[in-house]
Image (tube, rainbow, N blue to C red):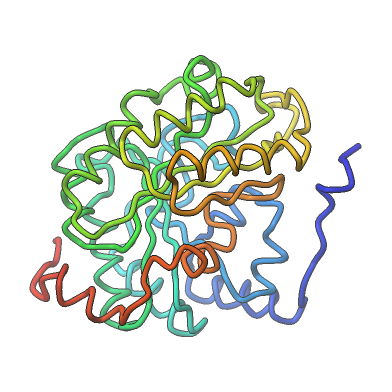
Length: 303
């Protein structure tokens, strides 16, 4: 049985239903639904969601993930504008956009990310934007495309310790993920980087701390750490429940290593309360439009 600290407490059912209906009406996907996130009821109740672009089918089959693997459908060119409209309807001050991995596309979907970012900015001038991207196969041109669109935060999840990659993320590469974060930090002026990992896959404390050190070595600014919960018996088996005290200990170590903000707890996910994290870290303690004038060209658009 799940321990007490993993029991989910819901929020406003009315707000949740409104968000779900709006997402359906706009024909959008959310990682909340596709990945069976345990916080979906709470987040929808708070009128927040993490939008998932580039379809709902992934070209990779990570052993921990609930998103469907297979041959993806064609890209909806209007998707970015629909996301932008949803952001406006929800009156979001901070939005998170992620995607499935699209190894079938030449740029991995980078251009679609850039168009979505631009569409959000056109309709939501005061909204800060966080994108959670796949590794884009480490292609620097693709990464440049996302960087040039000037989101305020670019996240890429390390997910687990290096020694478990062959079992948990066989089509990914630990060093490549670190290089993605390093490249963004080197090339993206005024862009914060973020990463996340899951616990309970079979790692020990020292291995966790080594991941934190590796992330800091490439300048990663923000961190999320949460409990892995297997979506089904067919997915990678969970090794243990991690006690909240251990999450708190990891948070203290991570902050000492220099992360600007750390969300560490059993129910924490990559974008869980991302808006609160941004405020607590005081990332943008000035007018967001001042940042825009410094970092984005109005003429930038990817076709």
